[in-house]
Structures are given as structure tokens and as C-alpha cells.
Image (cartoon, rainbow, N blue to C red; front, side, top):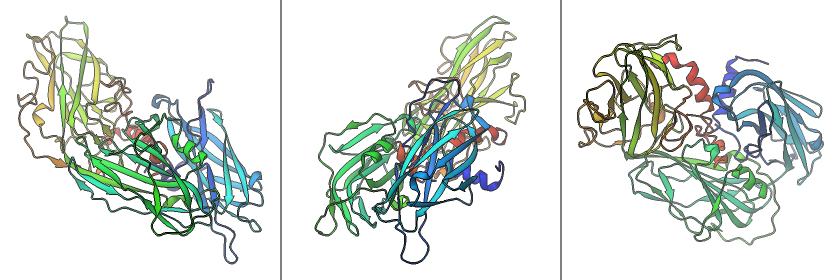
Amino acid sequence: MTRCSPRTVLHRAAGSLAAAGLLAAASLAGAAAPAQAAELPVLALGGPAETALHPYPESGEPRQSTVGFTVNNPDGDEKDDDYETPFTITFDLSGIAGVADVEAEDTSDCKVTGTKAVCEDWGIWAGLRGLDGLLLSAAKGSQEGDTGTITVTGRSKGATFTPFTTKVTVGGPDLVMEELPFKERTKPGDKQQAPITFTNRGTRAADGVLLTLVHSRGLDITERYSNCEYTEDDPASRGIGYTTALCSVEGSFEVGETYTLATPLTIEVTDRAYYDMFVYGIHEGSAAQRTAHRAGAPFERGSGSVLKAVPAKAKKSAAAARGGDLDPWDNQHEADFRTENTADFVAYGDQVAGAEGSTVKADIGFRNEGPAWVGYLRSGETVATLDFTVPQGTTVTAKPDLCRAVTAAGGYREDQKSPAPRYFCDTSPVVKDGGGLDLPFELRIDKSMVGAEGAVTIRNPWLQDPKLPFDPKPGNNTAYLIVNGEGGGDGSDSGGATAGGDGGSGDPSTSPTAAPDPEESPSGTASPSASTTSDGGAAGTSGGSGGGGGLASTGSVALIASGTAAAALAAGLVLFAAARRRAAAQHV
């Protein structure tokens, strides 16, 4: 097992960010397995509900299909993440003897021997991640329609695993989604038509299709159809703000034919849009596919009209047979929307009092007063950093976990346990409208001073370029923590609480800005938090977004795990959560 090779690093990144690099849409089939009562964490193995193989050719080499697998730790906590413990994944291939031949990927830590494949891996952490995949091709002598199963099990001293079984079939439909030409630069209120169109290029007809639609917080589909079921901000999306629709469309979708929606979808850009994503995919409408995409999240059926797909050109229908998709990588596309909008980040301080030698509690933070939410879904970049300077004459005795100690000038500080003169607290890659950070600090009053104050500033993660590109009111980006002040108040409206003195009530000082490309956005680093948000989110999260956990993996659930974003998506943020701890020294 190679632990630190460049190949391994790239493989881990691809697996973890398969939010927006890529797990198959059904890769969450095993993600929602219930946790069992045990001392060790219980990890759920998963993968595609079914894999279709191209039939064995009359001449030439058989075409291989990559089958990706996942492992999910749904009850994991970032504080308990273990990046070193090894584990072994075993694939029982006896069920596909005579149906498929199996090879290990060149970049994997797997070995295939007879009717067994064994993969070595390591690291037990929260959320969903990708595992090494297998290369499958139809066996010589197999016939179209032949089928079998692969059973996947795991073993480790640091965890127990729930097994997973996937079906393998020779032949099947190959549903190919057409990419739509969306307008990328938008304004709130804009609407665009989405005439979803797809073709079956497989060897069998598809008996019904499952249309999967996922959009982020700033977008909306104007009608909720009666043959679609919907979920918002499901647990697997880590509070990012996705809405997922699973639409079961009846019909026999024939080989070689192209289909489109009888009435195009309407995608609306809402008032809170800034940087958003729309993911649209097509799969055969089996019960296994619906279960995989639900991934245990609660769904509610719509009450509008029926969403229908019709042939792009007339063709007589015929009976269809169910099967997996021969090439699941062309089932889905993603569109990015960058909206001309703003988000007003408002810092708040506190005012505390105590005798010399006493310890006081102070609550500081910021709120996003909108109208836009800000989410760097593809890159996983930190949105902003709260910069806190400790008031003179006081010492910090307790801080939120996500805040890191720095020098007075904002430089790197090796010692993170002893008190520091200044602290940086990073958001996750998502800050919802109405969300923010609530950060409780405890301070000991070493020397009684009247009106000692420390600045609380919400800024860009790059200290050298503090301006928030989306915020038109920089005057309310700074508030103060005041110790033993002469007046009352909470530090946000007393004693010069906001820099610039306008309290955030003045006119915008800059014009609205379009959302930046997240690849161009400066990044920050963060660590887990111990605070809570106004909307009941996890400690130190951005508007309840989960503090940068695993993306995306772009689905509902399943799409966030299957798209090319992100990862974030998704499904997506697992790698970011791990890397930000190691890179703290580079972003001060």
C-alpha cells in the first residue's frame, strides 16, 4: 500500500471531491444505511445500484466499464477524524463468473485473484468518500441479458462495515443527456427555458426514465410537478442549500431515439442568487435508481402538472426491458450561473464588564443580511474570515475550535494552546442569507481599564486584500468588543462600534458586483468550531451549512455526489475540511 505517492494523492482528491469529479449518480445506494450501536464507527459501503456492460464484440477487445464504490461515515465527527487507520475492502466476484471479467485500475491499490478482488486503503473520517474502482467487461461467451452480482465487504481494526451488493448485466440502455446553452451571467428575476433532451444509444429500450434535477439556493424551478418528488437541504448536502427533484417519467424510450420535454422547465434566478449551479441528469426509472438517489432523505411529492417526455421525431413504441446504463458518465450536465448581486456582511461585537482577575464571556460574530447567499461550491473556497483583536488588558481563556491564534500582526503562530493577541475564524465555503458566525469567547480581565476595545472585522480571507468583493457596505464590516465601557449596549451601536460610523445604514459605497469565479477567489483555512448559528446550524458554520464538510458529492443527494462540481460539491468538501487544518499556516 503506497501512502504518499502523487498518484495516491490525486486518487484521494478525485474520490473525495467527486462532488463535482465524479462518483456515479447511484453511488449513494449504500450511503444511507442506518448506524449500528457499536463502540467502533459503522461505515456504509455503497456504489451503483446496477452496472450495464457493452456486449462482447464479434471482433476486437471488449469495452470496459469503470465501477466506482463509496464508503460513508454518516455519524462521523470532524473532531474524531482518523487519517491513518488502514482498512481492507473485499469484492466477491463469484456471482459474475461467466458474465463479466474484472481488472483493477492501474492507479488503484487493488489486486484481483480468481473470484476475489482486494483493495487496501486507509483513513476513517466523517462523510462520504470514493474508493478504488474496478474495470468490468463482458466475458467471452456471455449473452445480452446475462446478469450477476458483486458483494462488497470491509474490514478494519478501527471500524465496522455494512456490506453492499451491486448488480451487473450485459447490455442495457445508454441514456445520453444533451447539454443546454444556458446564459451564465444573470440578474435577479431572470428566467431561462430548459428543454431537457436526451437520447438512448444503448442496446435495449428504457422502461421509464428518472429525471434528476438539482439546483442551489439562488435558483428555482417555477413549477413543482405531480410526478416529481422534492427535498430541500437534505442531510447529505451538509446544509449547502440544494433543492433536489426526482421526476419519474413514464414511457418506453427506444434505442436510437431522441426525446425532449413536452413543456420546457423554467429556471428562475431569485433575489438571493449570487454564484449558483443547476445539475440535470437522466437515468432509467427503476426502483433501485430512485432509492439510490433518495439516499434516505425525506422527499415530498409536487402538486402541479405531469412532466412528460415526447419523441423529438415520431416512432412506434415497443416493449422495453430494464437494465443498467452502459455509460453513466454522459447522463448528466451542470450549468453555472453568476448573478449580479450583493451580500451585506455585518460584524457585531459585545460589551462586557468585570472586576480585575475575573473571567467574562463575550459573543462576537457577523450576519449576512443579504440579499444574496454566497457559496463557492466548485472550489470549496472559504467565503470570509472573522478577524478578532483581543482588547488590551485581557487574556483569552477559551475560544471556538474554528478560530486559530495568530500574532498581533496576523502572522503564523506555532503555539495554538496559549493565549494570543489576535484570532482568525474562517467561514465554510457557504454563507447563507440570514446566516453567519456566532463565536463565544471567554476572557480574563488582567488589568482594569475603562473602555478597552478589540476590533471584530469580517473580511476577505486574504489579509493583504481584506475587501469583500460582494459587500457594498464596508462601513459595517467592523464592530468592537468593549470591556468595562462607560455606556451600555452590545458593542454594535455604542462607543464607535462600527468602522465608518454608518452602522451599515448608509447607501452602498460600491456598485453591485457579479459573482466571482470561485477558482479566482482567494482561499482561507479553517478548523472545526464550537459555536452555534442563528438558524441552529452546527458549530461555527456559515448559516448552518455544516462548516465545509464532504460535498458534494454532487445529489440530491446523489447528484451532488455524482456531478463534476463538487464538489464541492458535495460531496465535496471532505478534502477541503482535511486540507484546511494542514494549511493553516499558509493563509494568515
